[in-house]
Image 1 (cartoon, one colour):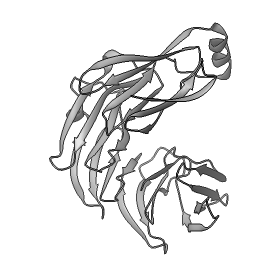
Image 2 (cartoon, helix red, strand yellow):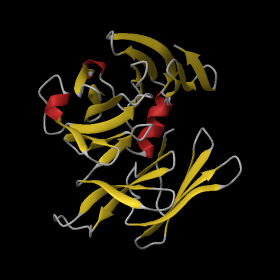
Image 3 (tube, helix red, strand yellow):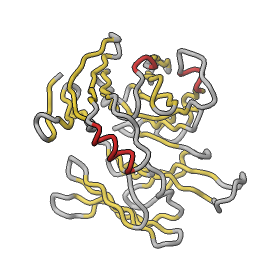
Image 4 (cartoon, helix red, strand yellow):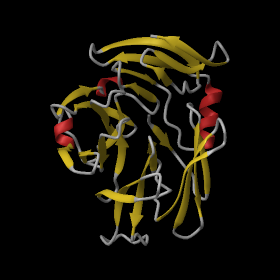
Length: 284
């Protein structure tokens, strides 16, 4: 069972589809109270007070079957020096913490069964075992089918539901130009060149069925730009791309509106639909 959260400073809460809520509350200094709550009965499943949690990170925590994984930023004072580190820690229900990995600017994803952890920096990927031992290391050049530039950033995406493959992308603003699937048993990456799709900002991967949905809705940088674009009535398209076949299908059209696609299952996609006036689900 896997839970992934995005939080805000001071007090944040994320309601999860399968009945759990996680909150982060910072005391304004160095301590952060992290709590996992069963929304069905209101019981607290886990409550830990942890120092130096990197709560400003968009993906600071994950909770899996009794274990909390947290990024901690240690000895960072805001100055551009080398005397700090980002550390990935795992905490048990009882609050026992173990440092698993350390690297500046790290991001991570944990497999659903806790057996493997993918950790990335801007240009490197490490695959860890459950106790933090390094099982494999990859540089961006090994995860791309073409020569990449300095402006390409490695981005973690997700694990397959069986935990046997990890997916990530190479991001070149405004969107991904390359996807990769790393088989854990062989440690061999399968690379998908998606630069021809010209993905801008909105996309969602389905790791089990190996499908990618994306739109040509442009990235917005301010509220005025958003309002101007919505008033334009420009046509936007939602596409489905079959990664193994290299085939694209048109799924829907909107009038200058986001689709906000979310995969509900390997063959069910949910998104905003202009005609329906709200969210719909379709079977692929």
